[in-house]
Length: 333
Ligand code: SF4
Image (cartoon, rainbow, N blue to C red):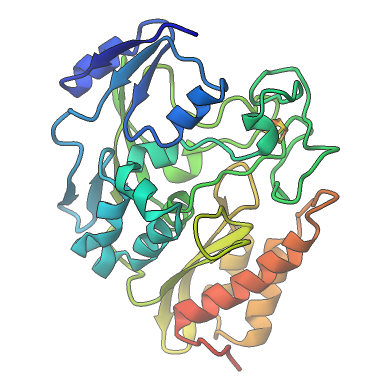
């Protein structure tokens, strides 16, 4: 058994200082980290408990009309917060689609951003090939079971997907992640926060060593009237997405003024369907336009042996989510 030291941080500066010790990691809700530790996937030497830092567990209004979600806001509290429900229903739906109510009561916004993939080979240390767990060892999923794996943006090193629902909605909303580290504070555009695997699948994000996530900022709400989070999974609750779609629209009558579409369950990071968005922007929302946009969103898909179904599933999910966002539950003409 490994010896682990525990330290309770009183403020952000103290947490960042403590994290500079070798083998230190932050712990918030612990809903993913403790699983990783129990399975021997993560073996930290020092746990820096950040849950007692004041000021990180609030939802506040920003001067520009956006909101700030503190990194320690619990997923269930964020989902049910009046500002989130009324102004960012897409995000509230995504929170509620994740995990179980018990886990949402513990999991934090910051921790949700750092969830690691649920690739079974990553969690099972009996498998000796996993570049994410042991760089350079190979990828058991390439020739193994890969039904749930990536169809976009993967590399020969890793075909895992990001499991977060929250992050798919935040990608569609162009959120900004606020962090504090040894070099001070900085912000990271959401599109730049998570990484594609490339030749470093062991690195999930662009966080620098010792940086602590302090908050996520949302721009003023533009999509509260027309948005929808659709999650397709093997069972109705407590399952990760096979495919998910965060669709947010600004409508001008029947015409799409601005479309935002992000996909989950398809890549190592939440995947913005930028080509599809461009094909919808400024266009009347017809079934033909929407079908063409959904097809274009998957044009670069490179499915694995067991997950070819994901390509059509993602296209259909985009069509359904955008229709729902536009208020056309039965489809458009
Ligand atoms: Fe490991 Fe990634 Fe391959 Fe899964 S897909 S076995 S996480 S390298």
